[in-house]
Length: 146
Image (cartoon, rainbow, N blue to C red):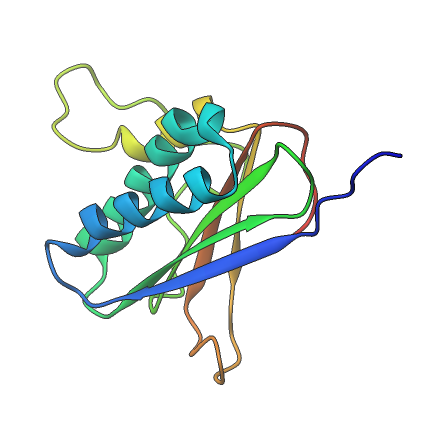
């Protein structure tokens, strides 16, 4: 009989602190080790690092890392922050490549190149989400809705 793995998810709330992205990446590695998904660590950590850096650099409030697996071998990494503005190009087909001498602007194109699927949700209602946006990326398989 085939074993069915139940879906799971974690949310790590982070202050706007320069140490927070590193703590979140370490937490992600621990989550993947606990769920025996070491093959996803390099890609998931890269996706998380870029999404976390985007929130840390472009917002002033707290943010959160969300990690979810609804299917065996597949993972969704998402970062919520308080700013409802979706980065240009992230929700409409892709970010343009930055000029070769640009010092910024490579993170979201890198996410789009390495993820199996990616997207954004604007959270307009206050409540548990406190509004803002959720940028997400999937690795380890095909796409599904959050």
